[in-house]
Length: 334
Length: 159
Length: 117
Image: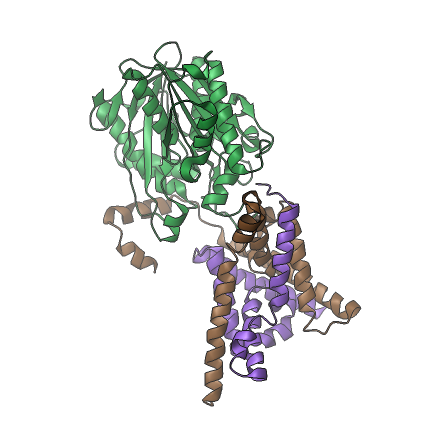
């Protein structure tokens, strides 16, 4: 059901009956290592290209989530997946392996919540019993496509972020138990004219703020309703800017509950990660791994996840375009 | 050029950019310059030692010795790039590794190695100059223009 | 000994100029190296780069600016030897070694190494 201008309320409260988080070596050394189902020692996963490795990450995440839900892939009606690579190739090729009717999505790093919103929509509206969402990113594949070859010697500034090598998957169902998706606020594209691809946090913060405000406005809620409000990958820089911007707009989110997946996933002193994690996989593995685990343990009752994406392309930057961004928010309650 | 860009921004965008800039960590310019100075200086000193080595033991002339010295630096860069160490040194040194010939060699080596997965002809061959291209194109073109200008000035008796 | 110290200092200073372009003007590494190559070509044409090489040795010949200088020198030397066509045929004369080495060893590198990520 539509509430307000851009928010869906899922009356039947579809449950996430199984979820999985797969990660790589950097994630293994991070803060949330214990919440991963599988951690790989290198970024190749036994494949001969980074792109094929990312496809493998998605396949593993999907298969693990389905298994943990005690289901078979034949029970899944639809797959919603996406990633950062050109033509969302890892997702499409992974969908080929899974043979589930497939919707390919591109929302940059906001794809995890875009996917979760759509999966919940089809289940809530009884157009599916089980819908799977899977989202991934791969550090080397993204650097190769968006920035520089991985062995290239450029000096990253302190605002740069480290793309997570990982895939997160969640199986949404009309039957069964688990953390429930209760509402989703779909974001619109916001562009504040920023152009630096090494400073995504500053570019994405306004989009996160816009969607967060829309969410509370549409539902008539208070930030205090939630135990945790987390953005996807604003990183330390973007998270701070978003917090200050929200305050400036009169929406006060208490420090203790406001966090960011990119800030949480890596340790403060991990080398090279600079301002924190980023990539579709960042929000996906942190939400479908860490946060859902905490909810299942009873530590959290209601969370709001705002996945943030920067919609630039390597060519848009060369054509002197700025970076338009988007954020989608999903509330999960148990 | 940056003010031209700012004029195309709305007041709200300009205000936000100022807001964001105040909250961003600044690049440690001074510290980066010091690191660049020492690493860059060291690499050049290494080049000088190599040149002196080739003059003494292989009887190259002073001028000609620059060639094998450059080749050695290039080989070392390719090795360091291949074993995955060069990018870590570069994160520390910044311009200290970009500006010497090591930077040029690294752009070629890293692009070539990266695109192996697309095959040796289109992948390696087609992408090798992805990052080195600008230096070669602008080096050649500017030299062409400068040479013409100098030749003309000399012909006119100005130089 | 003297030569080593000046190579270190001048090479270091040229790198500092590069760092200021990278951090101060926020140019990309490609734009920075292109700027220095063009500056090297201009100084080379004016006859100002060679004295720097004589003084600082590798401190001036290792940075990418020397690439621009060598390209111009090649063009002008060949012009003096064979006339106008020399401007085209002479450009890569001096730098041929550097470019060939980079291609050859870069390709060998791609045969031997896999990217580490």
